[in-house]
Each structure stands twice: as structure tokens, then as C-alpha cells.
Length: 139
Image (cartoon, rainbow, N blue to C red; front, side, top):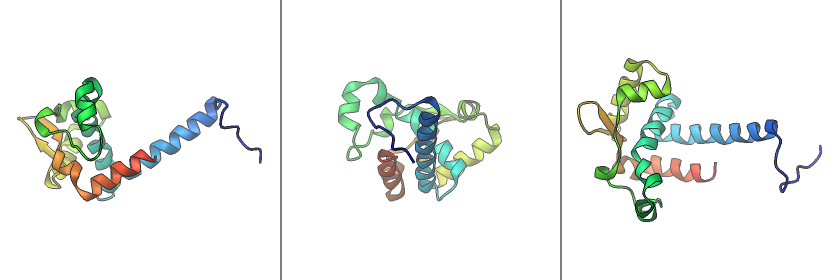
């Protein structure tokens, strides 16, 4: 088997293979935070992506809360409606709503207003979530 020169740009097929491997490792890492349920892991990751958006848009917040040691407070997190979440994932509303309810039962997600939810700072600080985040750094 021929060795791959790490300094050269990979071709599209190799790049897709590498990206697929990272994606699978990331999905499995997040699923661990949701008791091994891949669908709940994907939904949690999507909520977390929206909740933590202020880190991507505000350099001061990114500097202050970008590490695992300092968690973005709930009041600075962005909400997403369950309806918008279901639509963005291409999932049925009821399936998404039930999954969000389970995530709320686990303390990973909190309802902020009638339909808006966030991934909570407390849930992010939990042992399983911290382990998943640490694994994502290496995915």
C-alpha cells in the first residue's frame, strides 16, 4: 500500500472519506452524552449548535467562554423552536418534540419560552457531555 503524503491536498474521494470518518466519530461522541441514542445525540447537537451561536458571532464571548472550563451562561444562549429544529433536520415535528422532551428530562435542554429551547450550561457541564466534547476535540 502506498503512503499518503500528508503535505499534499487529498483528492475529493480521500477528503470525503476523511470527513465521513470525522462525522461518524462526532455523532458517536455526542450520542454518548445522550445515553447512546444517536437520534437524540443529533438533535442535542443541533440545539447546541444554535445555543452556542453567540460564540461564533461575538469574539469577546468566544474569548471568555470558548474553552471547556468556562461555559456560556444560559441567558446568553440563542433559542430555537422545536418546529424550526424539526424542519432544519428534516424530521417529523412529533418525533423531534418527543426527543426534546427526553433531553429536557436529562437536563441537557431547557425550554425558555413556549416553543424555544436551549442546550443548558448545566447539561454541558455534566460528565457525559464534557466527555463527548472532549472526544469531539479529537474527532
